[in-house]
Image (tube, rainbow, N blue to C red):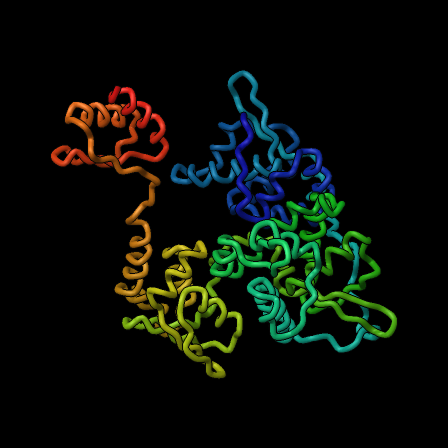
Length: 451
């Protein structure tokens, strides 16, 4: 059976894209096997647990007997996922397909279920460390770090506090979200502007994916990085872990993750430690999953006015991407969507659909339940203004007139039409417009006719 094509839309897709040898090395870690099991669809989990103590291959027909008649679509999804992650090994013999659990995965998961597992590091004793932040303080810290990171992305001079992000992190964005010319400050690319309008989960997944993809340039194996991130997801939020328990590569990684707000670093008189936030402990869950809706803050009125109930500087800067911000109060941003502000957004590569989606996803609770949450006249007008820019297409061309005779005009018209380069003609006035690419050939053709 051919391997299912993998598109890295979430964290487990990135795991599935690893070579078979590296996947088997990952599956020696019991916690990684549990993380894989957590990520599977419900029916796939059922298959893994039912086959956990079956060493013989199971035929495709036998496996289908475990499913009700109306569950075959879910069955196919489950099988595809298990094959992608190489949790299932597939064998085709005599026109019969059989499935068997990956022996390494099977052995590790058995040990984990029977004996449990011990993480490479245990939380530090409360007697050694200073007062730890509460869950609320840790959540606020993670949000502040993430917003500061995005502000740094928009413009380093707009961050409210000085921030020194790791060079490896900034290199990632130099490639996709930022561009920098010689003797100029970094500027956002079209993808960078679009990135800012994504929801937080999608943004975080983008960063983690790029960080993993570029890890080998830093001398870090992708499998080792993924293993460390998955292990990190089993740590307890608000607990402190000694930095001395990390390897040199992991220490460098943890500093980068602290830039993003996944962990908080603290230092005592003798020892240093890191504290995972919820962003880190949820890493084994699909980061592309946006089912958990965050509370919105934007109200859009039919007169194109925007009222954003937020004190966040980041929210203000994001709204500036496509609207005219008029003034900002301690907890309210007031602005308007104008034709000029939208044209600036379109010039930066932001689409009308992305703007409308952003306004819908961040709608204030008072209007979020309304259908539609963004007035139709506003969303329609945003799309119409975008279509205005696409009505006229610029094509380099040449205009021909003053033909000596109608025969010469018709021959030139036929010549341009044969080459599919005739853009317009007026047979009565003997005028025509042809593409610039054919101009040299057209002149040679006319010169031959005039001899």
